[in-house]
Image (tube, rainbow, N blue to C red; front, side, top):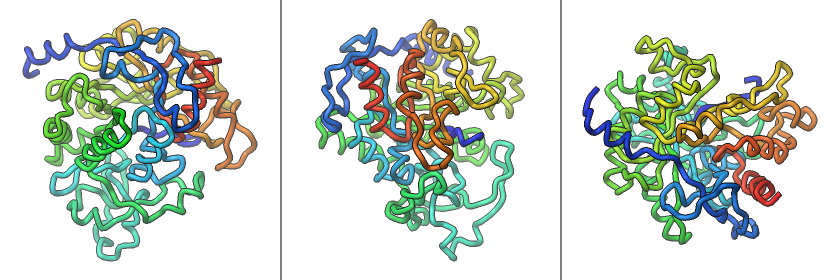
Length: 394
């Protein structure tokens, strides 16, 4: 999943079959996580439709634990994933998927792991530090594709943004890097233990970059989903990517619900840049662009600024028509990312100037929920669940 930092041609018949089975996601009864936080579990989302199975079993607005509960634990660790479930998240974003040198899939925010692991303190890997061009950006550090899985398993996760989350550094070094296969097994274990279906929302990261290295992500991800029987229309695994062609490829490989991630309106997906497609995100969120996406995906994951833009001072302005336009063609919207700390909130919801202090996040949640979004990614699932309870019962 992307980050909002402060100020910061083939298989035609198969394609047609997949397109035909794409449908509008329903809504359902709110109840997930209610027992954990002592909530009533009786709230209903407006227009919710109970039953239907699969995605229709999820409450609306859906609370998605962004990289787990990354507001409280180093992201993409089992500590973060587990806490997200404990806090009542309906779905856990487990995880951002990148390959190893020997073709395994692991969960890291980016292939560069200098900021999310203790690799810099391992002298045996000092020579692996290098500079690469990642989606047009010169990036220096250590990259997962230069390590075997066994080597990565000797590393431990650390907090990515310690300036905003100094308390998270308490847990530096506690957890290793999980593989996607381990996540799929964990999902089954947690479903059994909790007596309710656990959902995950993995993302293919930089798929064009990795395909050119001979480490195609989609086929590897599809193989694992098939192995664990999680490649079906009602499987509790939603797959997302910032590259539309990655989602189109996955649409031919699996039946899972799929979502196209969308960054700022003036940005271009890297696969478009690589292929010479001149379109920007602004083109993708027009009625025509959304109809095209609806042909191979069930949802979109726009940045929150595409839902409600901010002015030059960082304050929220008037909502766009994106929610209405996406719903009209049968797409759901799971925007990103709600965080509790001041620098990540719209200016009119900040309190004070401390970088790690919380602002009026409940007010921000309420404002975004009022636009009709179907869910939201948040680093603080407990806050999101309480905000939803307030909203649907308010």
